[in-house]
Image: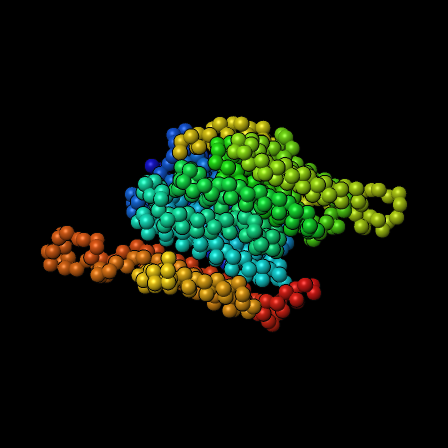
Length: 496
Length: 134
């Protein structure tokens, strides 16, 4: 048995320790240690994904203890994909963020890199683990680190936004913990596979039902499903941009992963869709989330807040798709998990470049941005097209699966909400583009007429390379989305 | 179900009722209180309620502490009946949960100090007013 599954999580954890210590020797050293840790983690994740595709699910026993007693990492096609996604995004973001960190939090760089690595460790652990209580502890590690991060940047609003985030985060995690308690009462086990085996014969138990509902509510609060989204926009827009770029694409998506994992591995479709009949209500909830997220995004005048509300809207897509109860819907939800993480990352990379050059990103700060920052805007436009769902970007393909799943299930309201929200996103982004393209920047207007010459003031090259690379990957993933569905998602869904 | 049926139900499962009541007190304080410290106390009560719930589900009536006695006197290999010992696992889980809740409380307290140093108040409505002036 090789140790790559453990290495994925342990590499950033050790790097966090050393990055914290390295500050005493040399400031820059902690940055290189962080890069090294995440590079090892990404490499291991890639190795594990290849191994899982070739030879099936890996069960990694921690310290050699067998499954129901010990804690195991159980890596199948779904979480192998998500692990690579997390470690890859965290690594690329770190490469792009060096200058942002220098600019925003130059006095506490060491703490930033340490907390950043711990956050990524938590996310990777949540994704890799096959144990329900271990999952809770790792969720709390991610949450604690993100509380600290949110408070790190904006001295006026940061601490209060972070405190409100803590209150809601604690409620969410506690509901999940309580749900696990109920499952433990009924099964006497915490291992996901073991619990699944035992509750397969307990479908009429009200204890299992309460456990299921409490776990779902906890996870929904953590993923900011409307109307439990209130904490998200403030928390994400007041944190340092280098952190909001990694928390925005990953945190909510990992919670979606947890929901899908609980639905598929622990409770099973049979229980959720045939015994409970909750699917219609949840799809309605998701429909409302999609529409509300879109409308709330329209009402904002700050680009950070607009993007944060788009996340609220996208969460509705994935929850709805997963709860449609058919294969197309679930395929769409899993594909959208991958695509949305990449799209949101691309959008926030563009945002980070703008914040670096402009400071503030209210809509009227963005005037003339196409001529000032053409490379940043290229990446941003591709990402925006993907959010709207223009082929051949990847956003189109997952939406296609979701919409066909909605028609198969007869959930026409959900299909309508998907189409309307695409229109809302189109309106939203063209509003932004209009300001960036047609309105010339304020310092130019002062110079009078005739001089249409605009000095280019682009972000540093490292940031541009990453943001354009990620935007380009949206098209690549879009073109190859058929292959991804065939080699990863369908075998996963058929292997349940 | 009449009133007379409910009372035995409460008495028989009083531990669950207790934890639900505590949880609701905590939740009420987190939502309704205006002072940030009171909200934090509410949060702590909320988390403690869940810890008590876990501790109580490990209990079995007539059972004793999960320490196997007389191991060295040669009786150690005698049959061990799980029913004679309370279940230690939920208690051990709660050690971790207590660590998590202490850490969360610590971070939250540090943030409250930050807020107080900047605005000299911990009342949420005053904070909102001050923030909207900016």
